[in-house]
Length: 304
Ligand code: NAD
Image 1 (cartoon, protein in one colour):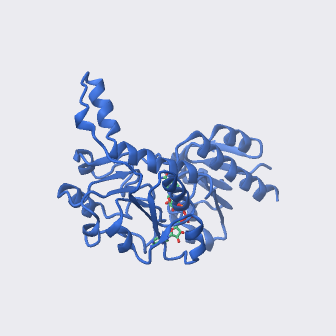
Image 2: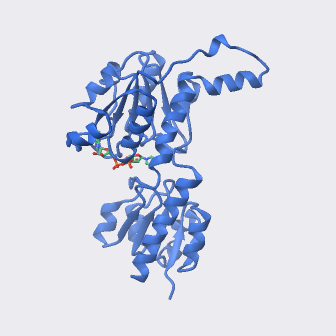
Image 3: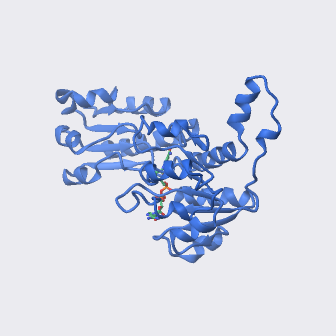
């Protein structure tokens, strides 16, 4: 008999078709609220929008595997799954390139004022002087979290001829930094104090919540730009809004928010921000890789 799979968030079409070849597939996260249906699923597949909570896991009596078509597992209660011996799989490598590229897309949009210039042109203006920008070349580029995405960002930043700095308490092998032409910082302050651009690539955990907060945000350079494509909550949003309003920092590019999809409305009224709706990994290529990667793991799980 085919396993029953609920695809909660839309995934790549080819991956969905492949799944249909091996399973009875239903779609729509609202079905998680139907307790009768929920009991029947052998597998739940999510991206980042759906939360697989302790309650969902407790009510999904037949559940054997949870698949996350992406990297971070903060929307899945992994501990509750483990307690019930439910396997959790994800696709950690699939999104790296897209997120890393987005960092520079957002940063360039901010420092070259691309969105504003575009808006001005469409209002039939020609405001050349207003849009003088800054370069990345020769600037200090700080990376907080030197895992998959952080390292890819380092490679690209080096391509821009920036001086690249990285901090990651769990990566102590100097060679990893040396091989990528990155200066290893021993604490977060070293990054915040000397970098012109600071990009954040840590998972959301108790230890990283409010990693950037009212105390350390003040140590950033007055014209520093922060880029957060990791998770909302890693930068304390109230501290950030305060710093932006008081011009303690130059600006911020935010792809992720504490309260998605309803971020703090204050962000929308600030000038020195670039806001995107959690789309750093939303490319055709990354979504195909993520979808296919988890489908292969699901197939292996059920077929052995
Ligand atoms: P990864 O696990 O490869 O790297 C994370 C790194 O953070 C690790 O090396 C870890 O040692 C480090 N770290 C942990 N605690 C730290 C701390 N206190 N200070 C500094 N570094 C610390 O993960 P990754 O694939 O590079 O992804 C990073 C994060 O990006 C994910 O956890 C996810 O939340 C986010 N992400 C966002 C999107 C998006 O669409 N915006 C897509 C993919 C991933």
